[in-house]
Length: 70
Length: 261
Image 1 (cartoon, helix red, strand yellow):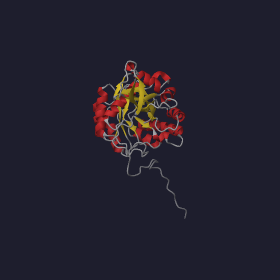
Image 2 (cartoon, chains in turn cyan, brown):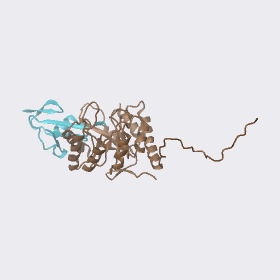
Image 3 (cartoon, chains in turn yellow, red):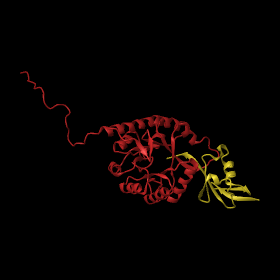
Image 4 (cartoon, helix red, strand yellow):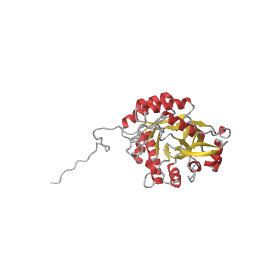
């Protein structure tokens, strides 16, 4: 079983039971997600909820960090 | 009389120069420019995580001992700017936000309607909002009335290097403001930054003028000195402008030359 989701605009297939925390550690293995923020389906998901939030079929995740700008 | 210290929302800054980190070709160059600028606050943008990216800008800024001010650059609606600010707060653990809501991709001028609406929503959500705004005294007042911690009018469009196109409007904004005024955008070189402070701005934010200069660390130093010079000149009190000359040498005691035959 797997779920199809969108991460930063790209289609991904994740094993069933994947959480936001597992997605973050996959995408940003260094620093335990330090400096990363996540929006799930258009709303900010606080870090404290990453571990307990499952990524469901069709979910859209945005993972952002600070870059040079302004 | 020395100028009052530069403070925003109770935080005091030793330098009136804020550095925008956009446009530096490497983190190493940014680090050198940060050091030369003497800036204590620098902006960053929020973008999608790139798993291939090498090094974090936050590490560079932390190492320089500079505070970070996230922005909402690239947002065209209040909705996007609000979400970006919330993501920045989550990522960087700061409730300060440089609010940008752009209305047009050619001029990058602010969208006044979306900007004010985003400012109101973010202030209600507990943010310390520093809005990038046009050089419009009425909009600046509306942003201050909404509870913004500073107003940041442009001198001219972002990255244009055109300096301060409407010194009268900037002066009016300064005269009426009860919050700090930071000139944001348009600085092309050191003299533009000095002029901003001479006009009464409390601070200056520079990115392209430094990052796209031929020698960014040298320009960072030049602009830092100009900001200091502007502050010193303003506290020293400039002479009034006159249409006609006023001799500085004494009028009396002129010798009279007797022509020899």
